[in-house]
Image (cartoon, rainbow, N blue to C red; front, top):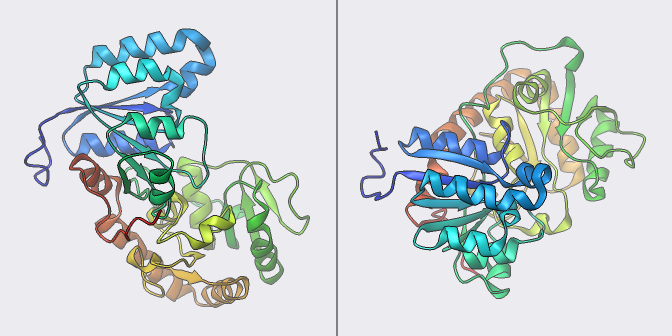
Length: 332
């Protein structure tokens, strides 16, 4: 049954073309589409291309045509099908490209030009991509997957710590903040590519996803956010999907403040924002010392995200040609 908030929707079949795995955004989008009453299917251009090379494009094109979608939603690996082949698939169908990253990748500009509209999770990038030749740009941040991001049923005692950070380590921009927090409390880090990071950081292991992500968040008094590159520090109301995952898993989130971010979540109510390394350390220390307050904040944050920031809510906007209602003007 079609979602009652989509009464005029004239299509029912959504193909999501890009990458696919149980923990990826594409899978969360597909689940949201099914909850909204659509027939949705993911087509894994990344893994199929890695396995089959030049055979992947024709195989995927035939598979997508057999599915007969009314709407094709591309993510950044969709270009691996081959741009001429993708153009044939998009012809006569509604289409959108949803770009999740803060930095550019191969094929992004071409996908933005091929699809009817390009959505970016970073509001300031609308002007950047518009200036590069993408005609229609909109803003749509990532979100919470209510089926996947839930508080853990069981915690591992060995995971317990004052603060945790889950993310990649190849971004030196985030190292000084993490080093400062590590000097002030028991900070543990999970993720890939931490080989060259400062020795003061305690790296617990590689990437954690799904239920393991929830376990780490649940065992941490505080869960940190940290921007990967300097450009993110000046993005309007920007946050990675890490924030929404932490909210969904019931974590007490402390993340970087940027202009407009309180349109997403309110400081001291749903989470804590920091404007400097010193503020981050102070917020972490305060929450570690106040278990009742951080638990109450985590509950408020989760309820807020479930009410306003799920993939269901984001997809309703995308399917009806809208963007976030508090988007700033495009500046080129």
